[in-house]
Length: 231
Image 1 (tube, rainbow, N blue to C red):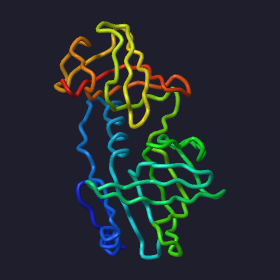
Image 2: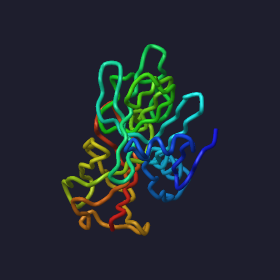
Image 3: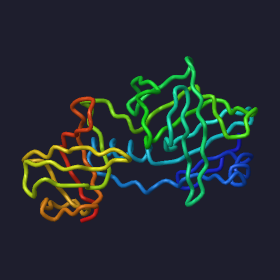
Image 4: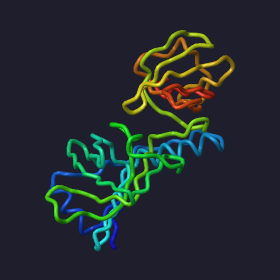
């Protein structure tokens, strides 16, 4: 198999033309920054993996896709989109009892756990009998699902901030989900240049990186570090 790579994009040469003429494309990876420190660096790498879009197609019809966004979910299938600028390519991902599902940390999940807006990777065989791009998935990994009580880096947009001093709470939109972020006293709150900043400088719409964990299967985050990359 010949693979074409550029800025976080990978696709076999024989399939490249077919994808373009089909009106599809591949999203280029966003630049990744190192958050500093061993734990933060691991979280940044996880974020980079989530954002990168890659397609590998073998001549035997096997395909591996990562960085696709879930557009819809049905009982045994979903539709995932790869985007390049204004060009989009939707893939129907068919699943069955042999499909192996996992979340970002590798633990098992089910199709019913996957939500619209999640970023996923999947692999399997292309169904050449159908007119629309379809993969019979052997493996499907949801890069947006996070295990509870496991430290992770969340990146999103500030929707609201309850107060300008700690302890307080904020609402941050990550992908398509609003998370309530608990901000206790004494945690590190820094700006893009790594220097300490005040919550009073935060504005709605700022881009935040929150290092913390989900204490239960919910949409709440207990923060240990907050970095406002808009400041």
